[in-house]
Length: 141
Image (cartoon, rainbow, N blue to C red):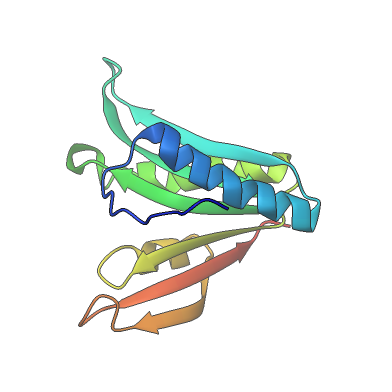
């Protein structure tokens, strides 16, 4: 192997990011023999097509991983967050998913996810300081 160097690159380009992500994904697929990966993205749009929020995640290994859920201030309190999660879960179920998982902080949306049937299975106290990070799961079977 040639001499390598490590460089701090906080704002890498999409191609470099995808190369690294693909490396992990290909390794995981090789070890588990589970090649089916699907992005799970639903976007909440206004009447003019403007983005009001959305949910981003992935389906792999029989599980839906919710990575981001956000609804803009103007659209909050109208049930869109729950509907986005339900759409993602329905999509995952239609493709054979048995469960869903999400991570949230104590200052974010734990009660919201619990109302939707998610249960905490792990807690990382002090992340960030004065708060906690929660790991939640839900059966989709």
